[in-house]
Length: 99
Image 1 (tube, one colour):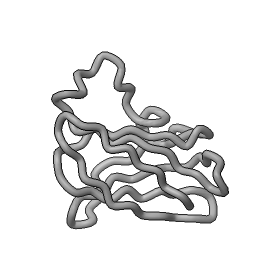
Image 2: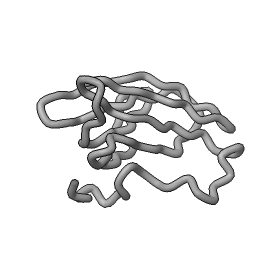
Image 3: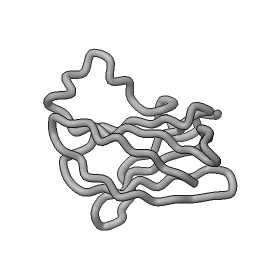
Image 4: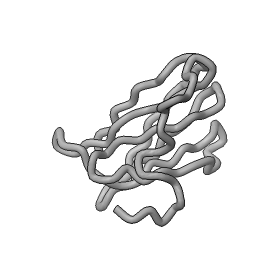
């Protein structure tokens, strides 16, 4: 998948990051039980765009976010789906989005 948004495929790599001090949101987009490539947007509590990452064919994504309630918007060919998620410092929120 093209990296047209400027973010690395799947989001920033967590290798070497002390995730005990970060609020991490990580997940996968699937369709019919299979990973699907596209983009995931991170929207704040007011629905404002904050960040976007391409997922690539593996459908995976990672965001480092401020603690709080966020909306993840999956954008794949022919479908869009939103999921609410709560980010907590020192924890990883695992999210599966089905489109």
